[in-house]
Image (cartoon, rainbow, N blue to C red):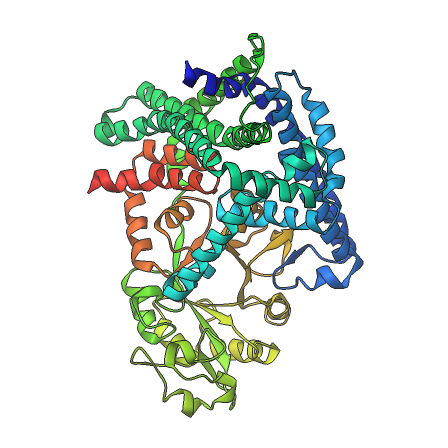
Length: 607
């Protein structure tokens, strides 16, 4: 009985939560469409097709850029109104035994935004939109819930024990701040307190009732984990059966397996999608208990059958059927059109050889890479040597920039007992074996470097075996205009607008910006897409099976093993992975689940 009473508020809230999520989704989609139109008009009026990490200064120096910044902040507030404010108000009404209007709660969510229009409010917005997704603790908005620290930054952090400890201490501190002020919006929205007073109240309530809050959180996670595990088994069973029975599965059997796989994944997505809504309800419930000094009890509402749940289940059934039947019949087309991504070794040979050396080229070739990526900088006497950082301090223990040294001085250095090569030497090492991706790097990356790089490449007749790349879009655009026969690639850490319209042959995107819709739009414009820097096995498999043309990775040995493994997948396994990729996005524990479903189970079974 006690468990039933504990779960009762959540069970009775399900129909309202489903309706709320559907309406909220429609509103956010409408806003995103309008925002896209406005943004494209602003970019078009400035003579641009997109704004990227290579020319972000545009945002601060033009009226169009300033308007885009303002629109970004408006969007953050829009999402907070829907995803957090309105949800807290809805949960409060449900816990009081009322029959709240979803639209009424949404309206109040927008009106309550005025509470955040002050310095304290800006800090709250910053935490909810950026900090909470990184720590994985507390409430966040759906717009930035996928926000994470890029792999090329965390890889540096994890390689240094001091950085690693400091990083986790900062995360722990930020999580503690989130816990202490977990009720700050509840006080402001439900008790009409100003944020400063609400913060003090939250701190006081958590200091007094933190044990009960953590106990309630653990119970919530436990029940969530049980529901998640059931769905996981439903989704995993078809994978295991397909591995065990292999080619003995009939067409009808394949359809049934795909149906249950899709149904299981939809269950997982539903649980994860609504878990935050129910988590907010749990926090709201604990707030009401703490405010009443544990005298609050839930008033049971009259249990009426709701058509919302029935409609929701019917929609899931239809989606499962719509995916499984054509998925089975068109398996051959899917099999033939996928899994062609190329492997590019980061900094010459990735983790398999000394960084940015000729030995790295040999390692990349050994493990079957398509190409190698290197970084060039100009010396004091005008030669081009290969080095990533501003100085040689990290790789050769000499705290000098290439521009402060002559070629003869650079040649005295050693990187793990390997000499620092010139651009010419790296091109000679690659010729006839690999494509060399030459990144114009550092403070000497200018038009002179671009001209010289083109000249050196052409002197060796390697126009078709080299690609000049850079984070500086103006350099890539310059090469495209002056040397149309040279292949170019633009490295974009972030982009907004018509990325596919940028002037280059390859678009090299950081993982977070590389969703399938962006990749498809770039392909339509006749350009190739490479993803950087993809080092983890589950990420490697994701992009190997996706529409990207290649990945840049330090883990070239692991990437070659993944490529071999997925080449042996059966049609059913491939279709299963396609469904998983369609239905699940990269986000915290969703991504971990996807890694298990996509690859780890197969690795364990085959081994």
